[in-house]
Length: 67
Image (cartoon, rainbow, N blue to C red; front, side, top):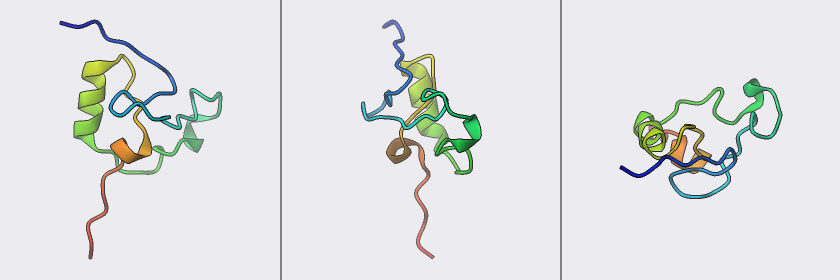
């Protein structure tokens, strides 16, 4: 099994900036993910790759279904 790697500011799924407020030294409640429904499958995949589960908005946000 490959060793897990981590970067506080990089999305482990796509390599983009994950926009994590905590990694930027800001309060957790200011993070993009704090008040959004997150994609559990994306978080599970991220956890398998890295010790952190911080993914970018494009990978972690659950798509809104059209009404």
